[in-house]
Length: 193
Image (cartoon, rainbow, N blue to C red; front, top):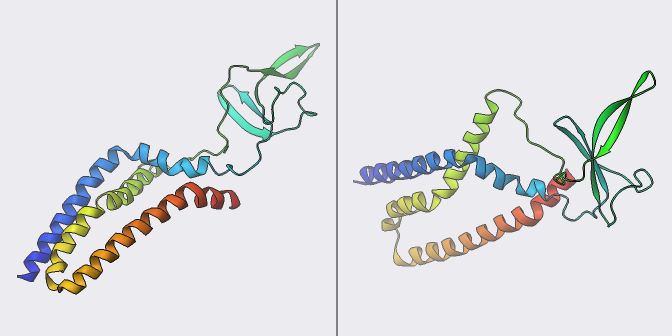
């Protein structure tokens, strides 16, 4: 009866979510990169400023906002970037810090923000949480279809037409909201925080 149909719809939905979860676990590094995109664009409305980045060994410090008075050898342009390697040299009997320009250095990202794992398990937990949410989103057409297959036979024709028109508009508005939030609102909100 109805309980068998409900059980079958729930099992099919769980299988669809499980398959999507396995796929999303393999793709979680890429999904994290996609989720970091608004973080990388949070300065998109800022006026570009000259920056200097410092290298100590393999460690990158900066970019730091500077003026031409502080660093007269900045390249020409509105927002030049320059990278210096910090070293030492012997002057008399003292060691002195030196700044050597690194001309072929690639410009650093505009955010200066990196995501860090603060515990040994955090990398796995972040990947798993991202995969779960992505799996729910990716598999949603399937579990909505399976649950709809259980619910729709109980509705009359008028109720079905209202549900289908509502589903179409809600899907369109959901996508429009996600895209505008992802590309416009989230970078602004991250900048303000």
